[in-house]
Picture 1: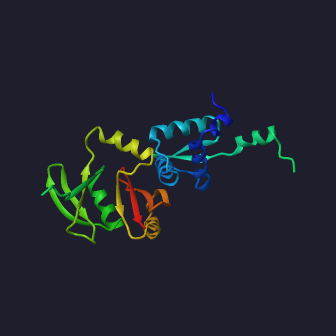
Picture 2: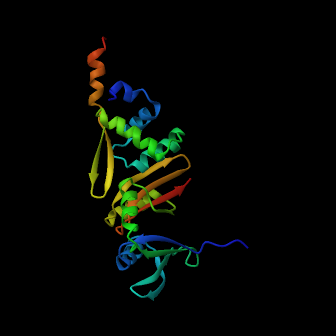
Length: 90
Length: 130
């Protein structure tokens, strides 16, 4: 099973988090369009879908059905374990 | 001469409902309505281009159409795309009429696009090119 470090280790997955941070609650279509047009990534829809599965498995995103649509949401809580492990000392 | 595109279609679950949405809400005009048994050859056109490409409101009666349409909608994928002068203004106008958007206007490179539900089982993209 991947952990949060595995999930963050991939640039496409980081770009997905960037885009959801800009606007939360996107369809798969919107995420794919943003990755293609804003990041120049040419991943297939299937590949993006697998990246979303990894992010969801570590709790960095969730999906919610609203009627017939499915939206993806960002959750940053799992990032807390990184700061807990290596606290920032001012 | 190569062929010309004169019609394109959206698969709708109810032609009367579709005609109401595509004319009253979206603002197209009815062009042809030819009864053909249970359904009609029913097309609409943009008032900007009444002799241009027609949009066929085609019944989705084939059993494969339902699963196909539902899969596209779940992933937010539009069936087709229409051009507008100002997608932000159109977003506001359609939202005021109760239209549900799955994607707010978003600028990506040379275009701004949005995606709405046509109430007939499809998502439709609106695009403004800059």
